[in-house]
Length: 183
Image (cartoon, rainbow, N blue to C red; front, side, top):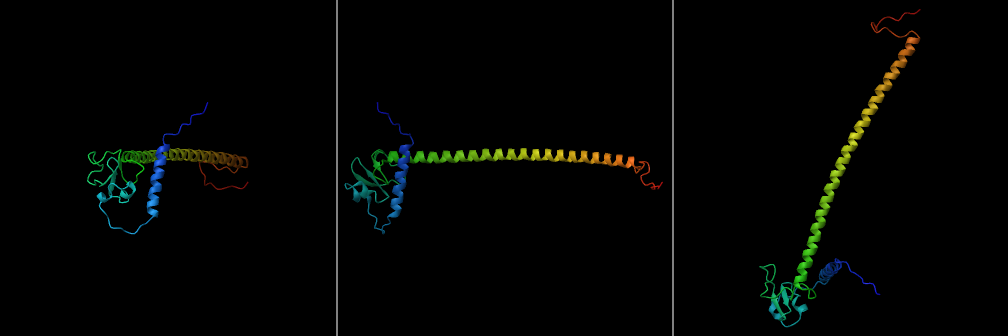
């Protein structure tokens, strides 16, 4: 039994984007000298490629006509040509698929920007809370060291007082400025 190979759903969109990018790169690579602009109707009943050399033209496969792209409306009306039969830019993809592909790519870009923004905000919040935790921890450690230092200072003072008491050097707390008497 032969294994059925399932292609990912995003593969056709990727191929379409790759083809459009290659077409755009090829159009930039082949610079032609400026030619007088001809009316789109002159390319009717010829070929799609000849018609679409002029970017202001739209090719309709239903009646093999080359018409001016309706600039005032974003999408050509169905009275001019149905979207599934209209070609603009390239002949190998219809206008309907071109619109869907552009919408999908724009949607993916918007979603990725939104995800990046949310991720950055989340990371900033985490790093801020992490910084606050670190500051609290440093303050706690600083306070612990200060208390330990005070405790050691008190212990040293007690030891020194014991040594002074043992050798009779401990002064009265009533009169700390009394004169030291030599016996």
